[in-house]
Image (cartoon, rainbow, N blue to C red; front, side, top):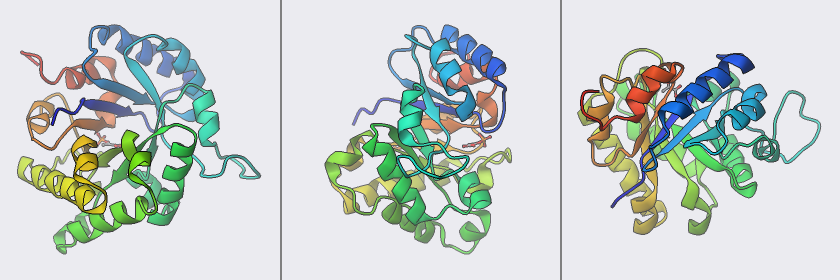
Length: 255
Ligand code: PEP
């Protein structure tokens, strides 16, 4: 199955508006002929409208890092799916491990957020991953299966066509430790089978499953060579346009 590669940058709580615009514009310039893959950057919410303007009519798409599941209301400090859409967002990260770890996000909350994103026409990038302790205890699949089945509970096949699933082992995020090729291959294959079991073979075949966790120019080619890896979610190495382009162009010679 030919799935369109998806390479995304999560800029977390880095970059002021001006810095985000500068990096986004640089990146867009470097991506001008890359029409065979989806490229996305997720700056902070404050920078969304500015970056949207900077990448308009380029190959770079915009995403947010989080959203609130309600459409509107008295939720101080929060931002809704419609607001992200209005600011030019097309994608939204949901369930990132930093949200789960530092903001107490549960699988049930993640499910509500996916529903809100889909309801407003945003494409969810649904992040899952086990901690080091969970892996060491042999619970990797127990955790991942629960995250996927609870996060996608109640959805019909037709609703999930825009979903991107991001496998990000927590122990590999921002640590410089990448999961081994064997570990990534095994988990991605497992996740595709799980999607088939929960939904259908067709959905499992079409859904892009991307890897995240210390992806860099030096390891991206090997990771992208794995059959069930359809892209990358990149944190640290996406902050610099020159570095990130070497990840985005993972299949070009000499990189
Ligand atoms: C991330 O934040 O999703 C991530 C994968 O970070 P890093 O690439 O820095 O490990």
